[in-house]
Length: 306
Image (cartoon, rainbow, N blue to C red):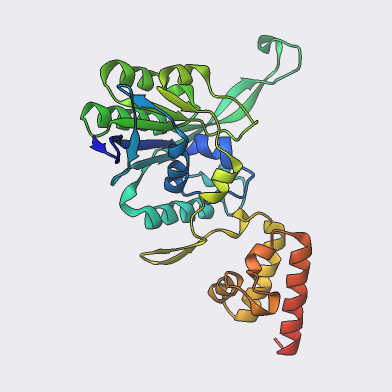
C-alpha cells in the first residue's frame, strides 16, 4: 500500500471482468461495444467513496490490472455473419491498446442437444410438452475468474479486487475472499441505469457496490476507432457503429471511390473541409447528415468521373 498524496493510502487494485455478463448487461444492441475497460474503470473509481481503517483510499493501477474472462463465439450460434470477426477484432484491439495492463483468459462454449419443457403461460412445467433444444453454456470462465481473484488475493498481489459482473455463480468466491483474506472486495454491476438491479447475494459479499454504469461513462470509455497492432491497424467494425444501416452503404461507396477499404476508412475518419470540417463517419449516425454526405459523395464521383 502506498500513498496517493496528502496522506491518502493508495491500494493495489485489480479488476476481474466477466465479458459475457458485461456484454449482455450493458453492451448488446448498443453502439458502445468497442469498450475500453481500463478507461471505464478509471472513470468509475473516482466516484467510489470507501474507507480503510477510517481513512479514505485511492487506487493504484499497475501491470495486469485488468483480467478479462470470455469465450470465442461458436459459428453455428453467431447472431450475425460478422459476429466472430467482430469479436476477434475487439479482443485484438484490447490487447494491442492496453498491452501489459490487460490479460484475456478464454473459456469455451459447449453446445449439445437437450430436452426442455415448452413454456406455456399459467401451466406448471411438468404438464407442458417436452421439446428438443440446443443447450449452449459458457464453460470455465466463471471458475477461472474466481480462481484468479482468490489466487491473487491469497498470494498478497492485491489490496483490492473489483468484480464486474452480476452473476451469482461467483458468490462463493466473494465469500471466501471475505473470510480468508483482508482484501477489499468491490462490485461494479454491468447494468445501465434504470434497466435492472444488482443481485442481492453479490451485494452482500462486497465492501462497496456500484449499482449501475452510466450511458455517458460507456460513451466516454471507447477504444480509438483505429488501433495499431503488430500486424497492422485494427478497425472498429462497421456493424458496431450507432447506425450501421446508414454507414454500410456509404462505406462501400467510399471504398469504390478511394479504391480500397483502407483508403475509405482513412477518408471517413478525417475532417473534411467540403463538409464544414465534419468527420464523415460521425455524420453516419443521423439520417439527415447521412443524406448530406451521400449527396456530397455523389457530386464528387460525378465531378471526377469515378
